[in-house]
Length: 187
Image (cartoon, rainbow, N blue to C red; front, side, top):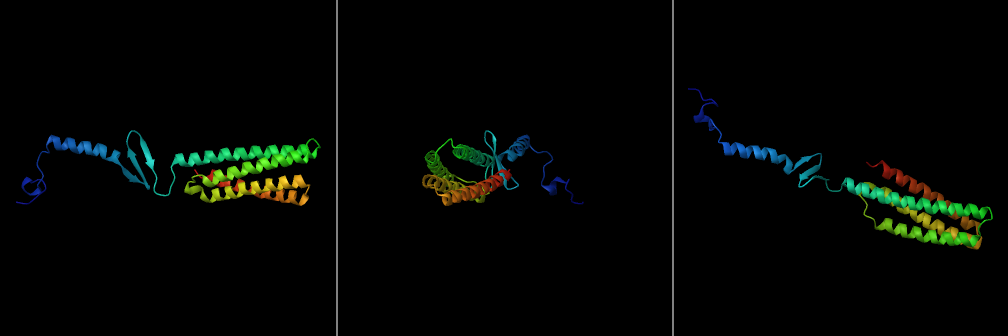
């Protein structure tokens, strides 16, 4: 007699699998995928809702969106500060404002940029944004320095300081725009 898989004596497989064993196998097959699987470097775990845990070093969607939102707010604040200052300088150039008023606003703006630079420095930065974030800090520091030069230049009537302030201002604009463009490219 030839041994075959159908022959109970040699296969070790009973003709009929008991119902409790089949039920347990069905339950395991149903819940095993929910318990966790590895796919593309991410691990999905089901508790009350499905959450995605990223591999070490990567950021979650919430972290990325939160960072972008914080930077968007600071960028808007910087735009408002710079727009107001340029409007006041235009008024000064038309003779509608004096140098001391502009120097006072520049001093206030210097402090605001110092505060924002501090906030940027203390911010938790997702790894995807670290290079751009350093560039943001540099740009905001240049704006702080520019407003210091504007303050001193307007107070002293010193065109050399005002030229330096404009140069620092222009450098800050370039750096911050490059950083923000880099940040916006991250999905």
